[in-house]
Length: 274
Length: 274
Image 1 (cartoon, rainbow over the protein chains, first blue to last red):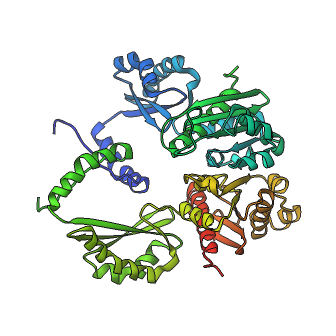
Image 2 (cartoon, each protein chain N blue to C red):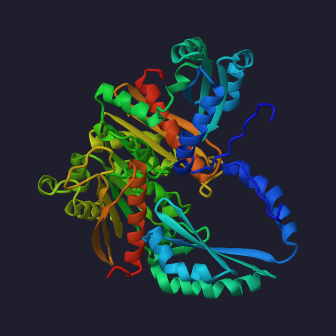
Image 3 (cartoon, rainbow over the protein chains, first blue to last red):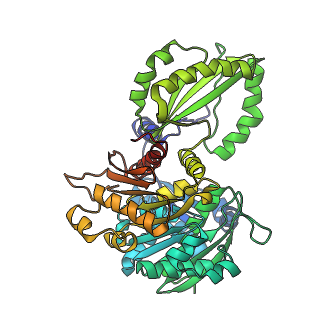
């Protein structure tokens, strides 16, 4: 009715994708009649949804072709620019100036486009520099290593990882000093730094990323509440340590910690953190 | 129409859950009028969906209250037994004999009920025995450690993990011998065993789980195709090594490898693998 079509599809990608390809896509193409609809997604991290909306509000309000839409998922955002035109080349000509305008505003918060992933982009930077990477994880318990090695071909640059969950493991495996654990605690900037340094030494890697924090739901204190996480990176470009204050459930805090760590490594390698 | 009600809900749990609790649940309760609908889910691993269906076919066909339904998700199955009765006690009385009948057939393939998770169940077994756990991961790259530490309270029994992705890391960090790497390869029963032994020694843990394999899409060979994975476990109960031949995409192979490894550790601790 009123020229509107609603298509309901099941959630599981294995069921949804063939249904879309075999039935919905042909139907949509038939409805369009001629011309193409082309989308480009800019992948964004390190900026909040409302902050991004504010920064792009005038662009979103004034555009009709291409349209600009924002999508949020766990700690990441997507800006989708969609153009309708006679052919692909014409659609790209419509998309290009809008993409440029957006890039001028939010710069390196854009880590990639379309199907690029944050760990994939970091992997590319490591490969270009001929670097080997090591990770040292406490509260993420292997999630950072898992994200990085989820990329096919990551064996080119991923050397090894250390999941040092207990204080004893941090000391014995990574050489974190007892003084740091006793005086500043396992969740501290000093411990994160020592974990990164230790991981780099023990593995012989060029770059090391370390994460230590409190993923909850227990373990928090007034001084260091649940969601307090320290990320340290040691690289030829320099060292950094950053304190994060994350909210959410255990799994969300772990996922955001790992993603933020990958993003900080990306920015450090790009020379954006000096 | 015809007394049937369809409720369409959005996929994201954050949106779906409050909608269900605030609107759908009261509606359903009102429709039922009186009585309760009670479900119990039996969580199953290590048996295929069609094999399970075959084993339970007569039960599923002859039951109407309670009903028996099977659900499959990545490497796991759920058997949901649902009873309708005047009250909870009466519903439980209907469910109990069906649960007993199912348990007699598939025994330890049932690892838990309702919201229990496989890593949570393994954690409970480790805690009861006062064991500390270490992991050594190659193709899973941290996913096994991540699954285990996704359980709140896992710091009670998870000591440390080693992500030894490169051959060099396997030798240097876990002490796998050069002879094993050269003669049998990094993807071999011998290497998995040496990784487990090494992880147990280096960490001082009581139990170690090691995984090495080819997650793909590249790296396969005619002798060792993509999906060839070795899991080794070293524990006070004994040692084991198992060869898996998994199918699917990289992420599915990784997830199934980690889940199977956790399940094998569970069965070993339960004394079911002798």
